[in-house]
Length: 179
Image 1 (tube, rainbow, N blue to C red):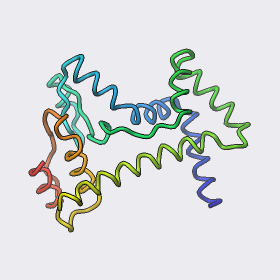
Image 2: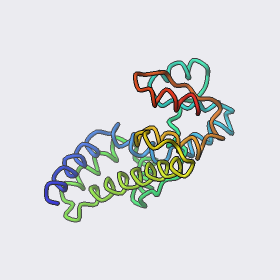
Image 3: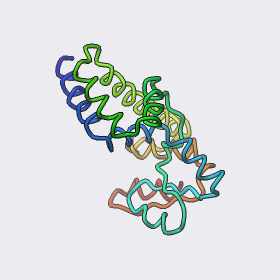
Image 4: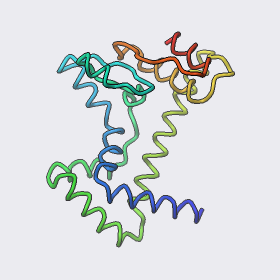
């Protein structure tokens, strides 16, 4: 347990010290609303992309999406407050204030937020895996392929197209053909 707390604290230092990491974490968890806005208001196509090459999707005036971003996540209330702070203060100043608060934080609030984010993400991946299992996806598929398959079961109707590329894993190639 002690070792985990040290690693989490090191990660927390990076999150509050680097504004871009903080933005990535927040935007990942709140991506669903952003994607809804792009699809409904701006009439953009959402293209599922599990492997790289989002440039091809952008070139088609569409939005590349890793399907799990379309799911609803349990978001820590402090993370919602963070959004309010960034609206008023901006990301850089909010990040600096978090860094200062972190140095005096005996309760490890930032560590708890990060733990909530990781737990929420892991829980959602497990739910996607379970969806694939319920649909009798072949047992020999790895966790990643089953989770991706589950994402398409869950949110496939919201995706306009699927762009993936063949790789050396024959199971991957079979699964993307069926999606």
